[in-house]
Length: 226
Image 1: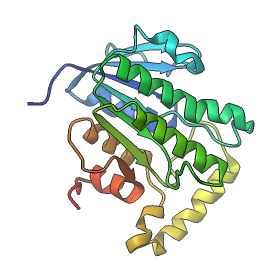
Image 2 (image 1 turned 90 degrees about the vertical axis):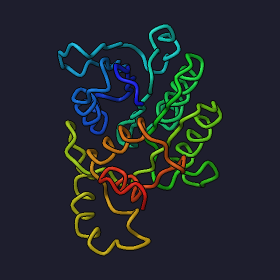
Image 3 (image 1 turned 180 degrees about the vertical axis):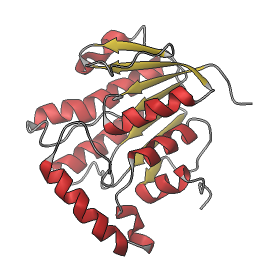
């Protein structure tokens, strides 16, 4: 029987997908507490929310508070927000790695993290390589239930405006029409579908550890056995 009264830990709740995930967790009767670890507040007052604000690059400082049943890691930056490659790696590699290590040390049995389609630790593309290295670091912690989501371009409207991304998203709406069959995984995906998939994975077993964009959508829409 699924345990009630669980505590969820969320990193990246101020972001697009993390924000959708937080909304869903607060409506989920299985969770009585949601711990948020971030640099800034989500600006939401709710009896189930407990915020821990600080430097996410020093996540180990929160070791005593990093206790719960499942970790949802939605941390991620972009080239435009973090043009310095060293800073980018500290965020996209360092934070998920630290979160997974804390989860392991505090006996948290489920860790779900958002990576990216094309992640490959041996890639010549820096950003794909960082995501791939992050995946390997997370898996090295050997948390029993670990799932790595690899979405394509994430749709939706962010709080901050990214002109180049907005243009690309409009292009993807047209390109999505022809991305069928084996190409379906390259279609853009909504943050809602990613969040729904994460919540489902926290309650159910799934055969694969790495889950590409098309499978994320299938799980979110209730077609997890396809």
